[in-house]
Structure formats: structure tokens, C-alpha cells
Length: 333
Image 1 (cartoon, helix red, strand yellow):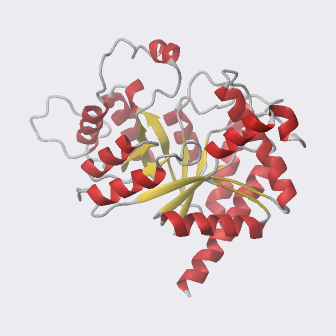
Image 2 (image 1 turned 135 degrees about the vertical axis):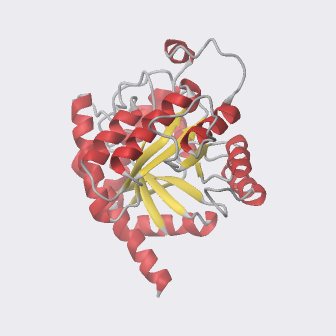
Image 3 (image 1 turned 180 degrees about the vertical axis):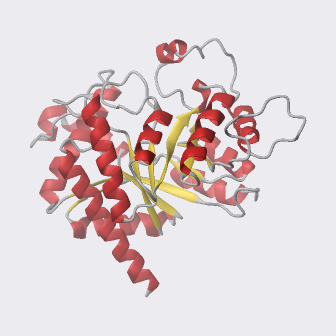
């Protein structure tokens, strides 16, 4: 089974966006060495703790500094953009870097209504996501000779398109278009089982894909011991509480007493939302990832982990890679 990285290019407390960019490139290079299949970045706006707002620019930067790992968007929030502009951006990336570029598409705005208006998209009424996906597919595919508009670069590059989602809507759309589907189970797992079942049941083969391909997202906080893994996890727990309470900021430093920091009730609510998570020692992470794989049978696993200390973050992904390589070797035996 393939395994990949979702990086939000986090900006930890005490650091700046430039530090996050340096860390992102370093993590991508280490992920490539560790055998990860993809390295995806996500579009978020007006969030001081995330440095990947200009997603296609960061993808190009990462691709420039790696050699073999696939690099892409997990994802671009298509309602924020004209499909032609995204086709040109990702067509350009594919023209430069060849068949290493992925384009995952999300339906959310990646910010609040103020962000949506600032992006000059707030004046558009209705939900045009399906039409925009179809239009984008046309720009990246083989256009008829009489097409009034073509993406240059873009046309004929066939950049692989994914649908991302956390609801039944995305599953239905991915199945309808015959596209691979990535579920945002790392922070919104409530509809996971139903969405995957619908996607697999209703999938229609397409020029891009002949059978369903499902990618499961999971958080990972791997360390030498269970206690250290739990300590590293407290940064993300705090960040999620702050986001939910309208106080987004840089990625907090870890704390020894998370309940004392955010309150037991809030911590339990956050842990429920972030329950698709593997945390602790290599043995603990192995057992938890093995359980997730057995339960959901993904074709690919994409891991993310908001860890304040960059060295600890790299080590977490390296431990997870060792665990998954071991599981693959066992299954192949």
C-alpha cells in the first residue's frame, strides 16, 4: 500500500513563514528518501499558522528541490479560482516537472466569508463546483480543435485530478466523474464510512481511472515513547481548539498538561474530531495504523502531523514510514 504526506507548511510559535518554507522543503526531501509516494500541500487563507496559501507556488518550490516524489495539492479550493487559471498553473507545473504533479480539488473556500470576498469570489451565487471541475478537466485533457478557449500550458498535460471532501457530496462527485477520492478523515471523520461506501458503490470508470481509488487521511504523532508522542500531539490539540473558538494563530508549543491548558471537555471534543490518529511509540503507531487500514481498506494512506519542533516532526514521519514499510513487507510475504 502506498503512503504519502499532507503538509500544511505550519508556522510554529517563535518562527516565521520563511522558516516554515525551509522546513517544508526539508520534510519533502526526507519523505522522498523514506519512500513516501506523494507530498501534498493545502490551500488555507488568513491563517498565520499555515504558510501554503499560494499553493501552486509552494508546490513548484518543493518540486524544484525533490526528484522523484509526486508533489501536489491536497487541495486547491476550486471555488476561489477560475478553472482556466488553475489549469494554466498546474499545466505549467507539469510542463516543468513532468508526471509528478497532482491536483486535488476541494469545495470549501479555505477561509471564512471575509476571505471569500477578499478573493473576489463572494459575488458569485450558487454552487458551481461540479461545472467547474468538468471545465477544469476539459482544459487539462485533449481539447477539440474548435475549442474557443484552451489552457497554454495545460491542454493535453492530463494532470491527475482528485476530489477531496469530508461529506457525501464529494464522494458522489468523485464517483460520477470517475476520479480518485481523498477523504479528510484527519479532522472531519463523521461521514467517513458512508462516503467511502457510496464512492465505491457508485464509481463510474473514466479515462483517468478504471476502478475506485480511495485515500484515507490520518494524523500521526510518532516518537520513541507513548508519552513523548502524546506530548507532541498537544500542539495540534491546542491549535484545533483555537481554530474552533475563533482564535487561529501559529502552531502552539506542546504542553505537559493538555487538560489544564484547554479543559477536559474541550480536549475530549477535539480528540473526537481528530480520532483518525496514530500516536505514540513505533509499536503503538503500528497497531493503530494497522487497525485503520484493516477497517477502511484504503488504496493509499496520507499522513499529516502538526508538530511544533521540526526535527521531531521529521522523525515522526520517518517512524511512520518504517512502520508502513514493515506492514507492506509482512503483507507481501
